Image (cartoon, rainbow over all chains, first blue to last red; front, top):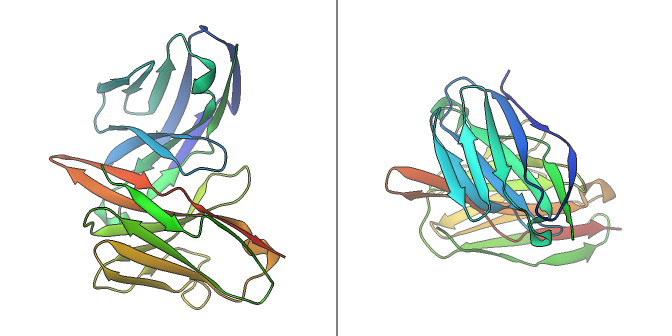
Length: 112
Length: 116
């Protein structure tokens, strides 16, 4: 069964303290792995799509990496404005109607 | 990228009534999706709406309860019918946009529905 597991559920960091969020997945025929940021009361904001193992993408203080079993979202020297819930989703092949399978998210809190 | 707007942004409705949520995209897209997100939970796909065909509903969601229209490549509506308090949730519209060989899914700001 296709599945996405994110860890930890919540993470509290001091401003400037780097860390990583994990997204483990099982899916038959990965079309893409997506990372989103979601602020309370708002829709998810697209961050990255990763397509194949070994791929990396960066945006400001965020860097996403992908292996055959998991993805990491590395956050370097975070600031309080990076506080949000980070969602991971994987997309299967066409016969699943390209449905996204979502993780439960990691709530990140950066304390000043 | 794609910019998505939703109307209304929020509403408080009485039990037994219906609400239609509109989703407008700033570019033509083939695939549009409707999601529900209950407080503190992740996203649950309600249905996929492709222009020119009937919407495809996920397990647990039916057309009578959540009718969807997709009249063109930039617009869709989701109706929540005969509402009950269990329908209180955030409803999100999403589209898949291609950029060369890459593709990305973008979300609207959501409609926060409270049913009393």
